[in-house]
Length: 171
Image (cartoon, rainbow, N blue to C red; front, side, top):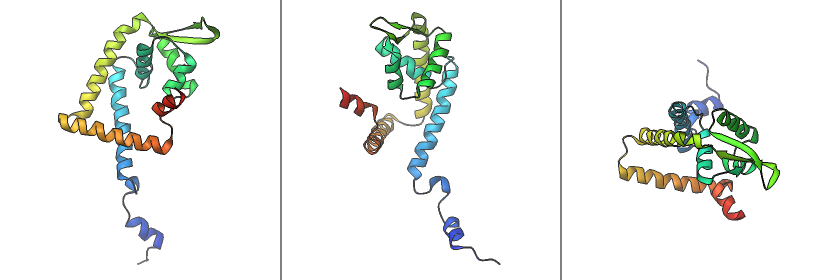
């Protein structure tokens, strides 16, 4: 019988690698992945890809915005936002046009035709919310939101890369 090396002993007696030193981080990662998959399923029903609904929500809330501002707000690579806009433009949900104040800039806006999509996205997100929180009573839902806000604040403080903090610092 061969004896295990110290490294093999350390690895054999350790926690499963996936949760090594961070069971909460591992749980958050798993939940985020599953939530994105679930979001993809409900959004497929309204002919959107995950992330496109967030872009549309931004346009519905803000009206016409410069494409550069939209890219910053979405916190995605410019090529990703451009591809999203191309797809949404092809389906008639957004329109891009030159900014009258600066012809070099491009304005992006939701079309009147996107109003039906607004209702569908609202229903899809409501469905996702109920699916995500099934089995949690109102007090648990409130507590989950409170705890997630604390986790978000911790991560914001650690990374110094929170959208709200950047807006506050630049505003």
